[in-house]
Length: 434
Image 1 (tube, rainbow, N blue to C red):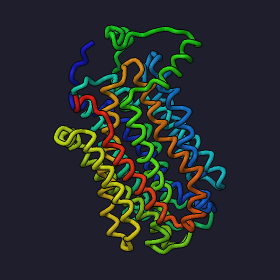
Image 2: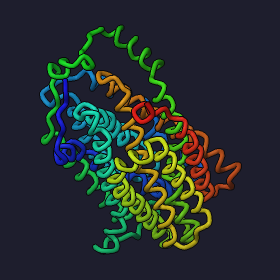
Image 3: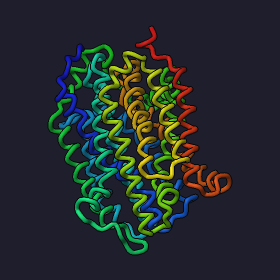
């Protein structure tokens, strides 16, 4: 079948649910390490407590992706998964800031991340389902704009609530501040609203229409055949996807170091605070503002990415953006003024825009349409595997080699991103090179 061009607003509606998904992620990334420290976690324990996201992604996204490839119901092919994930994630967001013990917060993070992953893979796949090749980069750029917009508001929300609305940032020992609690409640409502917006404004192509294309002709193989097909596809992924995977591994090792340690590093080393002190709380709050700043840069850069990739090619643009992100994280080691932290956030924002657009744009060109959901879910493994490595190993590294320095951990993350930048130059971008 020949897919028609969609209008800007049709693509916007198609991607709008990602604003909600990223709102949930943004709250988590900016606040979970501090929540764990509020509840008594030590620096070397924090990476283990972040295992929920990568492990649930490792298990859930390929399975959900393949399942959504084969599903059709009253709501469509991908939309049932959006909706189920949104309901469960919203409940977890409401419960998370009411945690009274470390084990409770960690358990709720498992539920939250599992639920978000149910929505995430099918959302990536529906863009490839609906858009033709000419609009693919535009589709992922709009998705990245919405991701950035969700991150901006979510990351800065505690700061907004305390600065402009007077909600308290002070809490008793072992309790989560009111401003953080309200942020999570608002996040639950935004998550649900955005997913429902996409569900009710977007129509999916039914199986008989997809079957009209040789690319999308269904094939029934039964349970044993499906299992065999799963492992065949796993071990025969396209060469370009393997090259992208290597880049993803190092880029996300760097990002995960930032997500885990940047907020508490700023609280300790720039604001010179101790856990629970006003200086510490102000530092965590300012780190949220920094995350909002890089997300704002991501928002702006995402709109220019289709033009940049045409001028410089996708892989060169990707490599340069990753390099800027790595240098940005390393520069944090030398910054002692909170306002100067704006500068590295520019590099991080440019890097994040490329990470949200370019790999998926390249993949959409090379993946077979009937297996797009599976491969998009599988590609997530190369995000979650490095996160698992960081979660399992970095606690030992920071304890034995970095003297429990959260700041040095952020710098190591920058080194990982520079390695990713070099690997990006090896990508065989078929569309732009042949």
